[in-house]
Length: 68
Image (tube, rainbow, N blue to C red; front, side, top):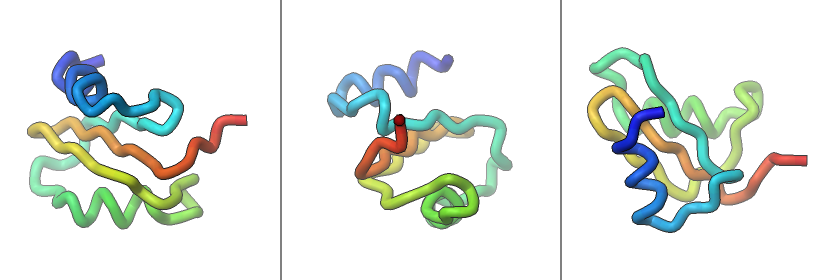
């Protein structure tokens, strides 16, 4: 796991069960494209609280946990 993303999550005090770390997406991918992708229910998504992008790694924070 990339330490930059872990640091971002810790600094923002995000709940781990609401976070998804994303990597290896094309460098020209926009925040809007990531948001739309992870909001789609067919991808297991939901409402996004926040999105942090650092180069080619992102942290998606959802409003609610889907953990069961």
